[in-house]
Image (cartoon, rainbow, N blue to C red; front, top):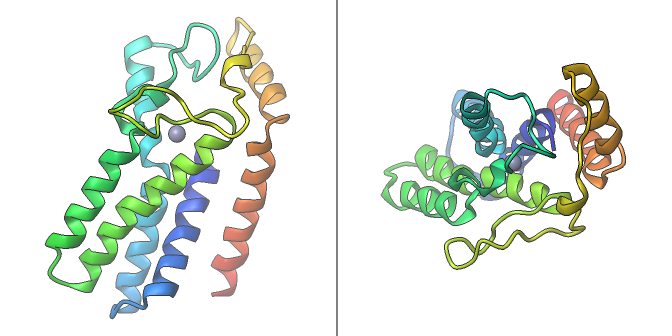
Length: 180
Ligand SMILES: [Zn+2]
């Protein structure tokens, strides 16, 4: 999934969390948490910046591009530990909710990454990638130029279930953002 989808999913996660736990917060604090939800929804993919700087390549998948999902930034247990640590150390509702968002925002990301590509859900016990459809292996993106690469990526991505889910998530987030 691309950043817009992850950001929208993070927004929906924060919105749902605030709805279910009813923390004692001001409107400004709730808005701040919605922004953090969007951030944590996309945050694991910040490792792409590292990939970009290290490899000096725009390729995010396919031949010659090692999966950024094997980095620790895509290890669910680390986000769980970070989130629960903040939750249990927090002195007020804002930081307790913030802790839950670190965990749930990032895990929304991992669930969505698990549809087509796969995540190392059991790291550090196993480095196996778990995915619903196991397309990781067949992704072979051609194109030698930047435009060629983008075109090839778009052709493959438009056949992925993730693509359609991403559209639904973005539309849902926009509707909820405008109505509530
Ligand atoms: Zn990711």
